[in-house]
Image (spheres, rainbow, N blue to C red):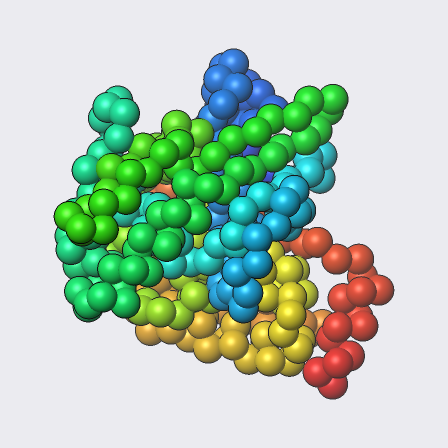
Length: 294
């Protein structure tokens, strides 16, 4: 049972994803008039980087699930998962604040950072991931506008040298710079191994460090695991939260009557003052999914 009173806010509220953000934000939630700076929540609390990927079939302008009520998001390319996000985040960290057109990434260094073995299959997996990241495009539509962006502008993959020249798109890099503690997050993600759902939930808590409230149906959709049976997903979600709790990445969690999940973030997070209230489904849909487990 959660003992600490938590105040929940809609994540589209600026305070729910950055307690230091200005109330004077544009449609993308960035200070002033910076049109091309995206909200970090749209990368981490959405189905863009799924907790697991069953198929890699290429899609075009396929919608992906996010929390915005006023915008529609589409994706073109091969589906992405948490391994792709790991690769992208490590490349972003390697680039730092450099304005150079590309950063030289040694695959052996990247593999070590990911906590993987440096073997042929892993090196090929890195190259495949960088190719997916470079080829994909993201569309954002709303209020009479349409905006196209990418994750990686270009990537030169040199398999003989076991290295790549990678240029991270400024939209993504700018979103990551809105947050603090990238190095800590990467270290913690590495400790979670290959557990995609734990990593996805960890990403949510990086954006909402005080915690969040959600029904399991919403988490299932947002994490890109809608193909799973409701009971199986709830079981896997509880196991993922147990792993986060064992590693002190959350304080505790509780499932209230009616099936709503409450997750309390770290007790020592100084700036965690607001929590997210995540919901995509209507009450009737939630009751139907809950009944499947009764």
